[in-house]
Amino acid sequence: MEEKIVALNPDKNKMGVKISKAKYDVVREAIIAALRFHGELTFTELVESVNKKLSGSFDGSISWYTVTVKLDLEARNEIVRVPRINPQRLRLAMG
Image (cartoon, rainbow, N blue to C red; front, side, top):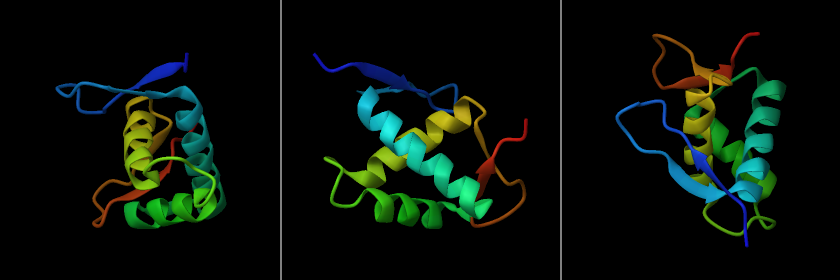
């Protein structure tokens, strides 16, 4: 049986989503690698980067998993939104 993980949402009023831990780990690694390499990315750039890295080797909607894992990483304070910038920009959390 496939191991699942609850991907959290930074909005405490919203429920987390149960997803495959294996898929979570692959997408998380791609998000972290993209932000390490680029420093900061817009949300659109992040989705494009993860799509480019995983296209052809990932079973499922890369965009949906990227959004879900991004929200989880925000809830766990691993990545942060750059304040007062539009469109939304993301970076790794300090510390």
